Image 1: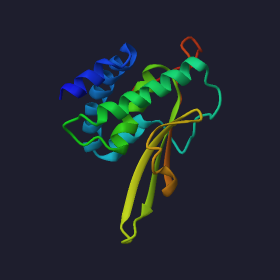
Image 2 (image 1 turned 90 degrees about the vertical axis):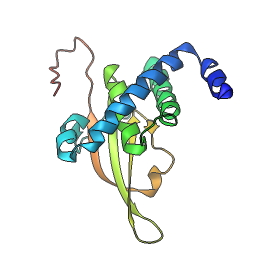
Image 3 (image 1 turned 90 degrees about the horizontal axis):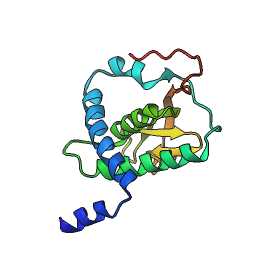
Image 4 (image 1 turned 180 degrees about the horizontal axis):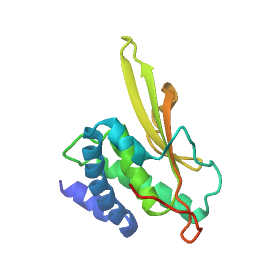
Length: 160
């Protein structure tokens, strides 16, 4: 226990704050996952639309990497299931709060026994934010693009 506390405090302050934000949003995302998918799908972004792979600046790339790290750390310590879809939704919300576009992918595959498996991962720009470990094993069956316009761009944003 002491080692975990020590390792937490050895993290930079920005990562420590992001870990707390990620922890809270993982809980929120877990509640969302418990709802019928038809109810949460509109909040995931535009169906079958991918966000651009280019266009991120250095600050955004650093922010995305920090969010990815924070979600991975926080997900290990939740008292609830925080697997791929929960992590992707939480990270998407964190990116949205920072006006960074992202795309949530959902995929399916069959295991060696022939059973259907599902996986979700999140991409922002060229970076895979969550779910990169096994995404190549899945066939994409759903895509949700979340565009986040710059503040003052004149684009109207509707928050459902």
